Image 1 (tube, helix red, strand yellow):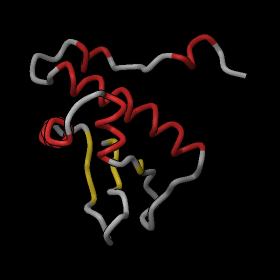
Image 2 (tube, rainbow, N blue to C red):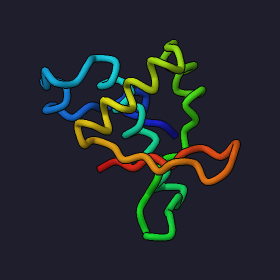
Image 3 (tube, rainbow, N blue to C red):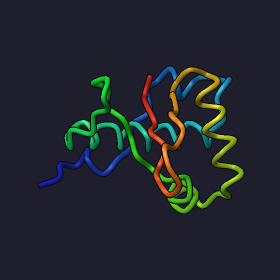
Image 4 (cartoon, rainbow, N blue to C red):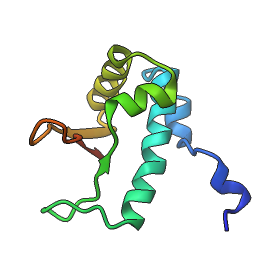
Length: 101
């Protein structure tokens, strides 16, 4: 059973108040944090023992109602600010692995 708080995305306060991160990147980060918790529950762990998120860029675009180009920009923004790390695809059709840092 879901609790009242399970219906919300959470954003750390220092992220919310940061002038260096766009609002759209903050929302994407909140979604990635939610997916991180799910990934941890589902034991999505790489060969190095790190929890990773498998979330297709096209799904991000659909979920946020943004273009693929905008999602790429937001992912770059989150990577450049040190909030996430991304491992490139291993083979065609395989999602990239996203890590919360």
